[in-house]
Amino acid sequence: MGRGPRFWFPPALLGFAEIALAAVQLLSRRSQAQAESASLLLGPAVPPGATEYSRGYFLSQDDFYAQGPGLPGETAWLVALGVVVLGTAVWYALALRPVRKGWFVLGTIGALLAIPLLDLVGSWQFRLGDGLRGPLLATLGLLVLAAYERSRFVLLTAAAFALVAVVLSADMAGMLISAVILLAAAFIAVLREKPRSLP
Image 1 (cartoon, rainbow, N blue to C red):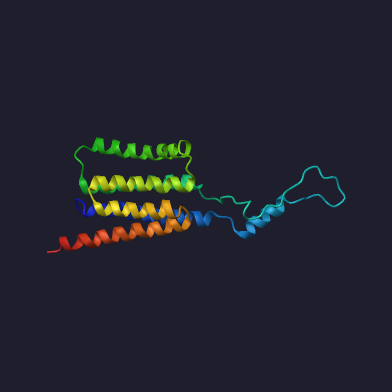
Image 2 (image 1 turned 90 degrees about the vertical axis):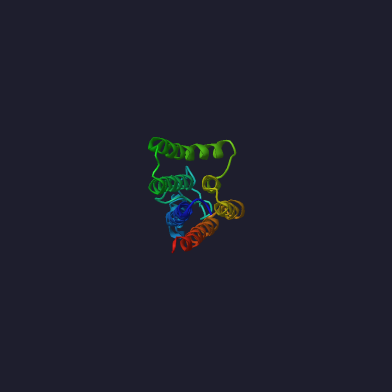
């Protein structure tokens, strides 16, 4: 089960970040009334019998979907993953007290820079969609954590996360179910470590 009880924190933080991301995406969607009013504004505004130079188009809810005041999907995932990387770095800095703090800070900066670079590679080279690149980057982070902690439990958690968030459903339902998987894994890890610390 890893080298200690500290590896529960990154999956829990990622699970809470996914729940926050889902809430932001739900709150930023346009309502049916907003979409209808936008479609009415784009409808023909010329009175009958007048010369019409341009024609507006009536757009349905499906055709006219725009983000509200929130962040676009790919930016929200990048921000969420950046927060998870920073939180994990602070957590491990407090838990490990690294001797070479300069290398630790450089590693953290490198991880933060790798997130948008890997996102660009996924977008341009592999033509992956916005909803797929974020879960793939999160899966990669969980695999790095599993290798660092030498934990089969984190590896199984990463596999379950990838199966739900990437393979089965890369939408809102997949995001929420994968968040539940991460939070349950963190809870199990905490429960499995507690009895060993009791006298």
